Length: 146
Image 1 (tube, helix red, strand yellow):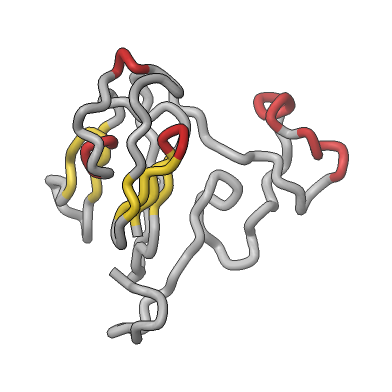
Image 2 (cartoon, helix red, strand yellow; image 1 turned 90 degrees about the vertical axis):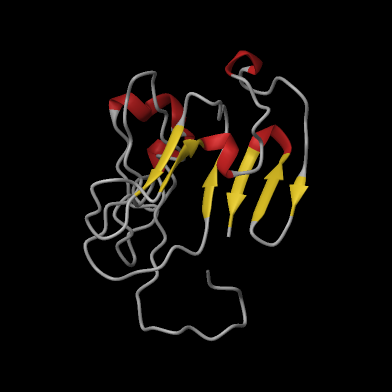
């Protein structure tokens, strides 16, 4: 974990991986072209490249989504998930071509929310804020890990 102000122990690269820049390439944020699938999600689609036309990734039931697949040294400084994040979303983290994940748990459990149920649905259920150094849970289940 890298905490702001602490020196790094390696020269590993840091990337900003998002729906706009799924590979984390330097200088490629906000470079997504609006597609027919994202037309309704892209109000600035008429303005061209450089405007956020892919603000999020929606994952349907039964789908797998790999947010980052990096084949060189690097560090994870933070992760953020939002929207509906029920127990049917499983977070798996693999390091260095492992066969078994180092982390495998329901997404809310990773963020200290083991009581969230699938029945609560988006925006439903109790709001519990968590504000700690490694984990923050914010309104509408904005899940952050540093």
